[in-house]
Image (cartoon, rainbow, N blue to C red):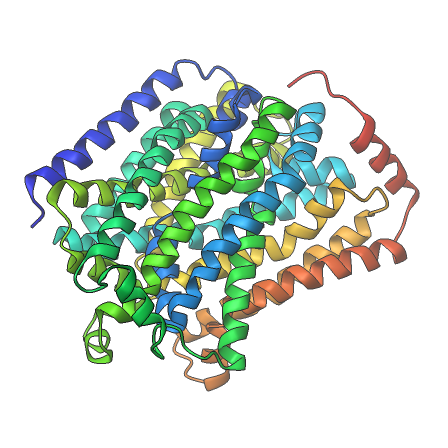
Length: 507
């Protein structure tokens, strides 16, 4: 069982999160406050909210463990890619333009963005459904990451830990929405940076690693820095690209730009988000890359399955962290997961309420009813994610299905719309459907295996989520551009003119 110090640390964290939710909730007066924080978020608040939504136990446990097992020290490339492409370049290219158009047109969700740009109610409704449904596997993967941590380090039934996370996330969202989440993310971001820095220090100096001399020795071994086959190199590159560029099309990441106060804060956010990603993601993947320094092939074979989800928890157990630091590390993982879970849940629920339910109803709900329904859907989404997390699916797979399908469908029509005035509704549909059909293949194969299929091809495709995600994103860009050249109408010009030049006065 976990020591008293660990539980006290976790209890203090939960209390702070609830206080933030209560205090901030009193200031949340409109649906705009609830979803985009009244568009008053500064650089630190926006950047740390972005970073904590980006990295969770999914990265620390699932991806760090999986890349460490497969690629050794090469796995650090994923962390560097996340910092350079997923944070620095993403903020450089997307933040200011997205903030500008969302502020001018009072856009609160990604489907609204598509509705305004392409003048298509169909695209908006399709985006709502896809985002809500396929956010659930990603949310479930967050639970899964914490389950293995709770099992190994806390010595308690992982169900208890998942219930704690669900309750904290639901409280934060129901009490305060975006502002509560963003301010909680600021606190959680500081915890994550502090915790990762301490964790790296203790891991490097532990007996299993042996300091920098031990790492240099490890790098000379076949497990430490292996020669990658063509298939392994492709897998690593696909993982780097999916976890880096995949964020460009995820609504919970894109909507972080909606709440930025002004251009000055957007510029400052570039450096803050990059530093955060380099420390947190680089540190997380670095720790996972040392797994073969800790365990032999026999040790790995004896671990619970799937092995990749348990490697990092057992590493942390082997390091022999002091009780207080172990509590901080656990809070780090809980904080990372709660912030990600809140972002996913708020995005999926607000999208379904604002853009789908309000759209199909004959009369739109007022702000009070919209806010209440969004909060109810937040709770239902958290519960649904909890049940999906109890399926026998590795963390990496669940996340890749979700990211692949959503970014594969929406990255192209979102990113290209910020720069290309000649995109058309027909071209957007080509990109969306082409990306969706491509990215859903591994997920469909996984469902087939859960239903009893043992076909070798089906099983193989089920494990190729990152590769198909990359193919879907690239293909959707091509289809979006080519489709826009071929499928045109008179309305496309009017839609483009409105999107780039109009100003909506009422939020």
